[in-house]
Every structure is written in C-alpha cells, then in structure tokens.
Length: 467
Image 1 (tube, rainbow, N blue to C red):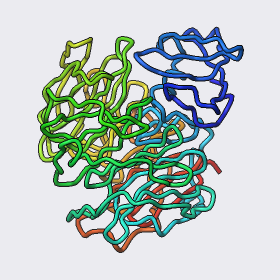
Image 2 (image 1 turned 180 degrees about the horizontal axis):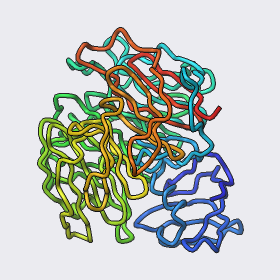
Image 3 (image 1 turned 120 degrees about the vertical axis):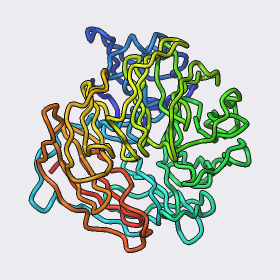
C-alpha cells in the first residue's frame, strides 16, 4: 500500500480543510483510487477524487491494508505511528519492517530517558513525532506530551484527582490521538479532550458524575476508542455499561440501558461485521457487541472473576477474550445477532499482559503454563514455555517483544509455531524507586517508527530497534 502522505488522516464526518490525497486499492489489488478520505460510517467509506467527485463504497471493497487502516477509526496516521492503545488496529501488531532481528549483548541503543513522566501505569500513543501518556504529580493526574526526538516534555494538562491504590497510585489508561485531539481517561473516570499540539483543554466529562459509572477497585483503566465522530467509553453502572460521546463536544449520545454491568478493565475494539460497524467489549459477566447507534446486537456469558482486563480480539467473525484469576479464555462466532461458542478453556489464563493474534496463532503469557502459543480457531495449545516469566507482549516485523513484569527483562522472540525461540534480551535500566511494593513493571511496551518505548513509573525509556 503506497502512502501518499504521512499526515494524520481525518475520519471526521466533514472533510478537513487540510485533507490529504492518497492511493486506495480495491480488494482485488488491481484497481487504484487516488482520493482523499471524507468519512467512514455504517460499513461504508466515502472518498473524494482529485476532480471533486464523491465516491461511496463498502469498506470491504477495499484492500485488507486499507481496511486495517480504517479499522483504527479516526486514529489512523502515518504507517509507523501508534495512535492508541494496542496500535492503529487495537491488535498490538505493528506493521513496521526493517527492524533489528538481533540486539547487541547489552541491548539496543538507548536514545533517551525522560525522568519526569509522573507516577502510574499509563501507556503510550505516538503520533507525528510526539508521545502522549499520563502521569501522577503529587495529588493530580496529568496528560503529558513528549518530543520523541529529544525526550523532552512539551506540555502537560490536568486530568483529575489522584487515584489511590495499594498496587500503585495514578493513571492506568493510554491516551488516544485522533482528529488533531488527544482523548484520555484518568484513574477516577475523568475523560478529557485536549488539543494534541498545545494541550489546551477542549472538554471534560466524568464517567461517574455524568454517566452514572461506579469506580472499581483498580480504578478506570480503559483507553477510550475514537471512531469517526464518536468516543466510545465504558462507564458501567445503571445508566448503561457502554456509552458514546460526541468527539467534538463530549456530549453524551447514548448508553446501553439494557446492559448495566459495572465496568471492568478492558478496552473496546471496533469491528466491521456484515458490512456494519460495531463495538465489542468484555465485562465481568459478558461479552457484547454494540451498534454505532447504541443498540446491543449480541451478548454472551463470560465467567469472570476478581478483575477482567485483556482487550478482545476479532478476526473473520470470531471474537476471542481471555482473563486471569483462573478463568481462562473463550471464543465465539458471531453472525448478526447469533452467537455460537467455539471453545472455552484454561489454555490461556492471561492476567493483564495481553494476547496477540498473528497468522492464526495467539501469543501471550498464561498463568497456567507460561508463555503460550494457542490455535485461534480451535483453542488448542500449540506450545508453552516458562520463558522470561510473566509479562506483557507486543509484536513487529515477525518478532515478539516480551517484557517481564518482575525484573524488566525485554526479550526478542521469533514468531514461531514450533516453540519459544529467544534471540536477544536485555534488562530495562531506568527502574523506579517510587514504585509501590505491590506494583511491578506493568506498562506495555510500544514500537513506533523504529523506536521501542518502555516505562517504569516516572521513567520513560526510548531505544532504537532499527539501527
């Protein structure tokens, strides 16, 4: 897929004045359309040709690469950007290539360390040479922006009051960058929208006061989904578990009044099923799909315990979820409002390090068996290995980047169906003395534009993994 511009693509419902023309390919790969993106809604994409003519077609009529770009909603950006939790498609699989296949004995070159990111476990979004995250400063949680070239903080803006927790105080969620704005959720459920360039506050909403949500033990950890003109969040509670806010104003557009479970700690994923856009979320007792208008399209039971955290995975009509505390995983086939269970087992008991899908195989750490490769379609174990111990995972260029939560070991592992194939490893050097005794290195690693970003509380480290 040839990218004509590295500018952030707007998926607003109106054409941005600075919209860029790019080359789109059809599903067969034989036809190209040179046009700018106008909108994505109802499973259809609207494009504007150079001569001004408007073309509307099904998203599924485009190439898989273009569909993947659109699947990131308004967050689609330059190829190497990482505009939200788990990346452009919310799957934690980077499309970058040309990365190092082996690291020096002491690890890849460290480019910089920022020591003023504040406390907490907030993750990273990286867009246009800027890194966005959150941190706790004294008793206030803040949204911050860092220059990826120098590691210097560019601005900060208040989000909300401190979330106190014995496993570590402060924010947990990852900001989302879209439409020239950055959207973030604080530990107490304060949702903010700020100008991505300046940090100037545009609007703020409380998941508790405005949407009837109930704060859970570990606080709000969901990373907001921005999809076109909607911000999808999960306040939980009697007014409705899942809700949509207007991206420009923060106005509450709808809540799922027929599903009122309390929020857990997972984040919504957008999918296109049957030509229509919908949002899939995992709660303590259920998995559900919600339409763009707020209608619950389908729902199936899920036997969660204590805390349900990992983000759902979707591919070709199949939804997969996992959880810790002995629960394991479940996968269903969805067809309109019909849900068919494919399997439910404890082959992947994933606590909060995440699971990723690559070429029909799932990779992640299971509390039962260690690092696990699992067949997506059948749920069967392909292989297991203790590896570097429990932790988080992301992927790029045919490699797994695994992070050990106990000591900060970062492992470069081949994506393989034949076993755990460790190539290189190093230990994160910048580790915090302020981390709670009960806390560990829990911020997930991120790869963006040839750089690997890691965090332990107030320390953010940037490594060059392209060389």
